[in-house]
Image 1: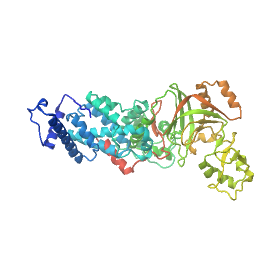
Image 2: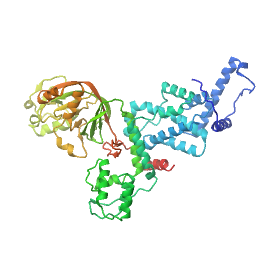
Image 3: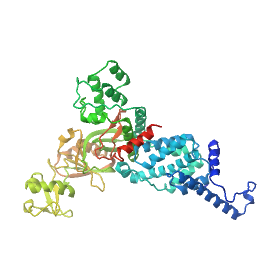
Image 4: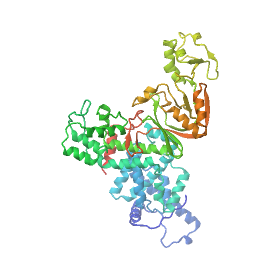
Amino acid sequence: MTKLCILGLGALLVCLQSAMADDYTPQQPLSVKTTASQLQPDDLVTGDLLQQNQAREWIDQVASEIRTIRYVDQLADLYYGMGFVPLWQDTFAANEFEQQLKILAMSNVSTDFSQRYRQLRQFKKSNDWRQYDLLATDTLLAYMSYIEGLPAYGRGWLFGNGVDSRLPLPSEEALSRLYSEIELGRLHSFVSSFQPTDENYAQLLLAIKSLEESATKRWPAFYQPGIIRLGVRLRDPDGLITILESLGDLRDFEAQQLRAAGVRTYNIDLANAVKKFQQRHGLKVDGAIGPQTRQWLAISPQVRMRMLALNAQRARLWQQKSTSILVVNIPNYSMNLWLNNQHVLESKVIVGRPSRRTPVMTTKVASVVFNPYWNVPMSIMRKDILPKARRDRGYLHRNNFAVIRSWNSSEQIPIHTIDWRLMNAKSFPYRLRQKPGKRNALGRFKFNMPNDQAIYLHDTPAKALFAKETRAFSSGCVRVEQAADLARILLTHSGVSEQRVNQLKARTKTKTVGLQHKVVVHLIYQTAWVDREGAVNYRNDVYSYDDFVATSQKQELFTSIYTE
């Protein structure tokens, strides 16, 4: 390992070296008068090994006191190479690391990182700098491993599974960079490099900061059954005013005016504030307080901060690196398209129901299909279509389904020749394909995206479903309300003229058009974010991905973090 030398020892170094001297006594100390030039080669090797062993013994002793410490060998090598100089005497680096660790701990995706953060804060308060320094360095190694693992494992870690409790060492490349940055005195910039530069991440951190003061106060328990509409007398008007003020839906002076006026009934000012609240939570914007609005009003700042912190970690998975990108946010039932950094299209979408979830993934739109056939997936055929076909012999014919001999054949089997008395969903030996037309489940357009889960975007004939606030109805693929506009924009972006697009739309034949400029697609799952107007948005956790631990454990975590 590269030997590191950090100069400028301060009080922290004296404290650390003094503590280290108390921890062990060298078995064969070198005389202070002996110089390196007077030592024989064998003596140098023996002394080097002895000091390495002493470093390991010292780290072992500290690790026995702090069970969280995991990378004992690496710590021994690192501190031995540095001459036992404290790594975190740069307070800017320490504060930056604590802030990043705080957001990770707050997200509650890892009990290990949450425990590490609490211990670091305790050691800092008690001025136990030796333990702080070693634990912070060990935690940095774990944090580096976490960041490295996100591309491969993040879709499991951040969507219900939680981060592995025992992460491997960072890669040799990452460790080499760490050693180099320490040697150059750039630990602060090294730690800062782990903070995403994505604007979405930065806005989420600001949203957390704005809630911190409210999180230390008692949250009003506003509850009033029934539907609260204009003119209804309020049981606890101040509780409602406080909630709306704390969350930014009522400005401070507006809240003061309502309190000064002694408002006791649900008036237009409160209704307008509730409409803002409903807009930010994906609810029906009618100003009436019903069960869903009441449920969101009851969610405390601590829980909201946890949602923001969790989604800040998720934002690491889909940082916008391309100038042209299509984003589907599953819990928001929305699609947005940017081309050359310009927002060009927004559309409602329908996503997979909880039993058939739309997966989180990154891919590209490769082609647009006009008037597509629908090759029915086996699961949908067995669960949905064949049971209907057995009950209603005319179902397949009316809906333009053809029975095809196999996935390797295009031979059609006449529907009237099938003896449905002998068939069941599991033993059905054929496949189904739906012809293009008004009844086709894919509508007029299909957007192919290479992936191993057979997921794509498409049009739909069932337009009425887009009027619903909650739109988790599909079998996994994403139905796009503005599919015709999406097809036109993607094709013209790839150099296809609008005249040609209109010609293809006017035809009834199936036609696939490849895209010269393939657009990156992110199917993401954000239950909290900050929109373009700066408003903090929250959405229902439709797939229950936000649940990691029991409520009691969450409360314990929040208490430890917010009462620092």
